[in-house]
Length: 350
Image 1 (spheres, helix red, strand yellow):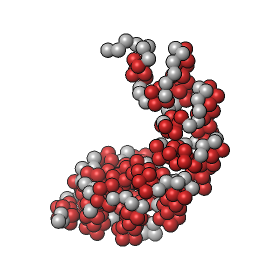
Image 2 (cartoon, rainbow, N blue to C red; image 1 turned 90 degrees about the vertical axis):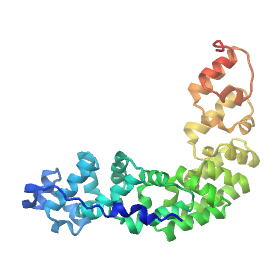
Image 3 (cartoon, rainbow, N blue to C red; image 1 turned 90 degrees about the horizontal axis):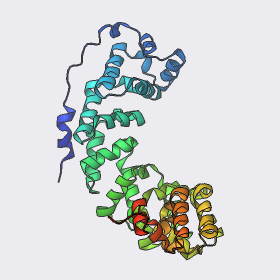
Image 4 (cartoon, rainbow, N blue to C red; image 1 turned 120 degrees about the vertical axis):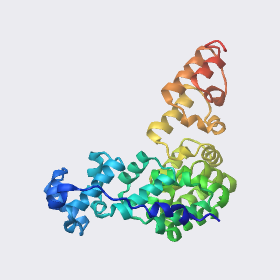
C-alpha cells in the first residue's frame, strides 16, 4: 500500500536559511504593522484575535510576510487581508511550518498561484502539520480513488477541508453517501471532486434532511436518487425550506404531477434550485402562452430550463414560427446556434 508519509518526508525536512530581515528586528511590532498599512484600530482587533501577537518580534513577522509576498506570491493588498483576518499567520515558523506545507502542496501538483489563493481563502491552512494532517488526508482520499493531483485540486478549491477530522467528518460523510447507495470505490471520489464543499455540511442538519426531502417529497428512489446525486451533488447542500420546497411548490402549482416532477428533477436536478422569478416562471409562461406547447413536453426535455429565454428560446421559436416549422423541444434546443441554423436551412450545410 502507498505510504503517504514517505511521500512527504523530503518536504518536511526542508529548512533553508532565511534571508536577513535587516532593520525590521529593531522595530516594534506596532511600528512594523503600521508601515505595512495597518491602522491602530486594525492592530487592536488583530491583537484580540491572536493573543500572542503583541509578543511577536517584528523581525519574525517580517520573515513570514516576505515569504508569503515574494515566494508564495500573495499580492500586497490580499496579504493585508490575510493578516487582518488571521493574524496568527504571522506567528508561524517559516522553516518549520510554511515552507514544508507549501512544498508539499507543490509536490501534489498544486500551482503557486493556486496555493496563494488557497491561503487567501483559508489562512489556517498554514497551521496544519504535514505529517499529522496532509499525510493521513492523502491516505484517506486514496481509498476513495482520489489521486494526489485531485486532492490538490480539492484543497485549492476548498482549503478548509484540511481542518476537518477524518473520523468525525470525512468518514461519516462517506458512510452517509454509501447509505444512499453510492458506490464507495467508484463514485464517491468523483462526487467529492465535483463538489468539494459537500464535506463541510452537517449530515444531520443539511445532508440527511435534503436526501429525505428528495425521496419523500420529490419521489426520487433508488437509481434515480443516486443518479441525481452523482450528476449534481451540490443539491444535497441546498436548504430544503429556503430553496427546494418553494421550487417544488411552484412546479406543483404550475400543473405538473408528482410523477412529472420526479422525472423533471431526475433529468435536470437544477430545476429545484433555479430562481422561480427569473427562470422557472417566465419559461413556463413562454412555453404555454407564446409557444403554444403543453407543459408535459418539458418532462421529455427537462434541459429546457437551462436555455436562455431571449437568446435561445425566443430567438429559435421566432425562427421556427416564421418558417411554419414544428419540432420537439430537444430538436429545437439540443444544439448550438450554428447547428440550429444548419438544421433548419438558415445557412448552407458545410
